[in-house]
Amino acid sequence: MWATGRKQDVNPQRLLVQRAKFSPSVMISAGVCYEGKGRLHFVADKAKINADYYMTSRLPKLMEDCKDAAPRDFIFQQDSTPAHGARQTQEWLQQNSPDFITKGEWPPNSPDLNPLDYHVWGAMLEKYRIHKPKPQNKAELQTLLEVIWADLPQAPIDKAILAFRKRLRACVNADGGHFEHQLL
Image (cartoon, rainbow, N blue to C red; front, side, top):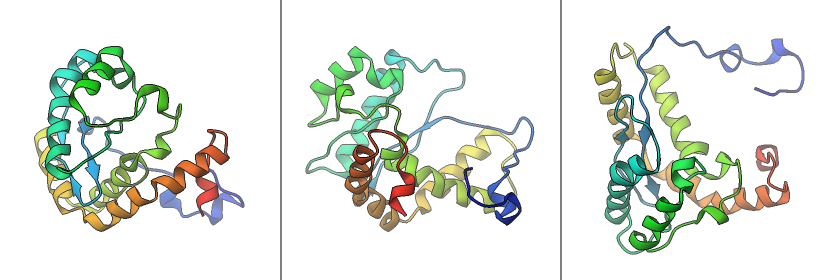
């Protein structure tokens, strides 16, 4: 965390996040849109996330979710992980998506422009932190995350999606650098 002033003036909960040693963890893919959200898709244990895995195991499910949540029209947005930017992934999207943000159109190294990153995952983490008792294994963790996901209110997700243009302008004004401070 970056803060001006003295460390003692910062809420201690913002300085340190403790995690149980060897706590269960999972990788998830999901999608959100204005007035809807898809399902959580858990990545298989020890899966190698490459273009082949992404295209065969993730993209068809994510695309199905998009079509269910926004049947009229949608623009498919990813981040810049290697599997998303792979040539075969981009070709698959050209054939199977009505519209998508191509690899060449993505701002480099800017997770601040993905509503999942700048809102949804943080909202889920807040809900997880207050949940007691904590899950003891991956199955319990997955169940809890699905409950949290289902209970996430749509209105703040819609607000985060509507903030996309403002965030994009701030990113351009910062020449692709950090811009969170410009949004305050």
